[in-house]
Length: 128
Ligand SMILES: CC(C)(COP(=O)(O)OP(=O)(O)OC[C@H]1O[C@@H](n2cnc3c(N)ncnc32)[C@H](O)[C@@H]1OP(=O)(O)O)[C@@H](O)C(=O)NCCC(=O)NCCS
Image (cartoon, rainbow, N blue to C red):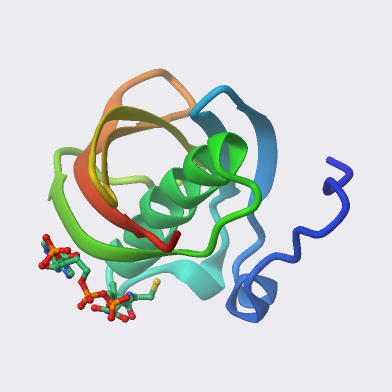
């Protein structure tokens, strides 16, 4: 995906091969391919990698609605439901509500069969 002018991804993201599939109207969809480098000792995709996918997908959902603002994750709660051992994980995130400078969102992560891998709820702080 070509980044809109003015948006530069976090340098951290160069270490995680995220593929941005969609980003519009407070929604984003990002895929993370399974790679050995991203696994835990049992060969499963590391929870930190899945959390990164969830957090980053929410960040892109926020960016899609507030491209002029800086924003920060202030809370990310994640439940891991099922492991990823092949294929990819794909996350969909959407903004669900806003209160003052706080943005709330939900993220669902699925594997390549559509099975739920993780669900997360996030709060972002919007700088005005
Ligand atoms: C989010 C952050 C930038 C806010 O700092 P700030 O701009 O100085 O804002 P303030 O502390 O003045 O808070 C502004 C308002 O937001 C509220 N707020 C700030 N942090 C909050 C939090 N974690 N949860 C709920 N409300 C919060 C404050 O209570 C305040 O509300 P008020 O205006 O009604 O009094 C700062 O707390 C921060 O940098 N946190 C760490 C974020 C981070 O590193 N995330 C990981 C990488 S993205």
